[in-house]
Image (cartoon, rainbow, N blue to C red; front, top):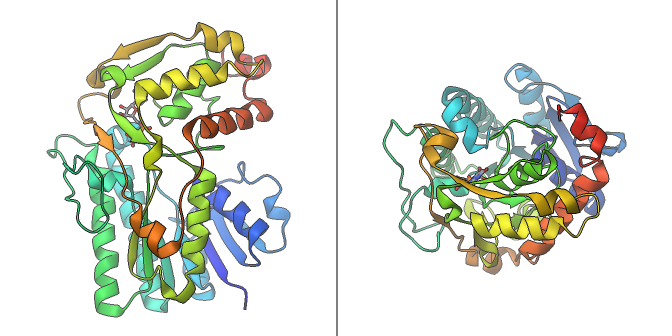
Length: 352
Ligand code: UDP
């Protein structure tokens, strides 16, 4: 029988890419909910995709009913943007922790498999050069650095899910995304500074002809992972052949794409120039520096380097990423160019 997958947040960056891949590459049914459908394109027309517009914090009965009805639950509704951890910490807690805890409990109650997004942020300022799912310490800053409310919320959920696994044999997989990038990550037409994650912020800056701002000089490093590679891993986890992903934690990341934010800025400018629509704007883009305090405010604290160990996913899921950073950048820019985000009219519409 074809699997029935429930995706909360089906219109999000990961949710929309995952839904598309399931409908293209598998014969499974998808039951999805999200606030809106702007990233889904033609997908809701597919007869195997049952989508409703709704809010999981309001449409609670829909959620519980569908947990009961489906085989696997993938709760992707969360705020996952560092700029918002410092501006809306309680909203992060209420949505990322409280709303998701209710879904986790439904999975326990109805004996359903749960594929839950943990986060690479969970490692915090871990001293380990390469971050391991089973052994790396999780290290956060003081309470007055509100940034950590996201990592702390996610850590608590990881622990709760783990405990349900031990006590009630909950069938779960925790996955930890490492800076996924790709089409639909954020709305780059949004002119507000800090409304996107770093790579899409840079694209937005090119569009709005603003300088890139490197926080504290851009020496921090991240391992950027192309969304298609990540989705391939998620399909394997959902498939869960021989139960190999059950009660396991997997980093999903690309250690070969570990670069400093300065390097990311330089590559973005170089690759953007390959596109005629962007050449002039990209060429004129300046790279400036800003302190973390100025950019994010006093509640922020940065993570200096984040490299995933991916041996577990390689060994036990037979997965590995294969998209290099330049290709990931190029394919993402190409997506936004085709979407028309860089058309002069759109720039004008968003106030420039
Ligand atoms: N950053 C930056 N300029 C920007 C936005 C972000 O230098 O315009 C830095 C930020 O301080 C962090 C890194 O880029 O060190 C990645 O930020 P992002 O918001 O993408 O998420 P994170 O990897 O920290 O979760």
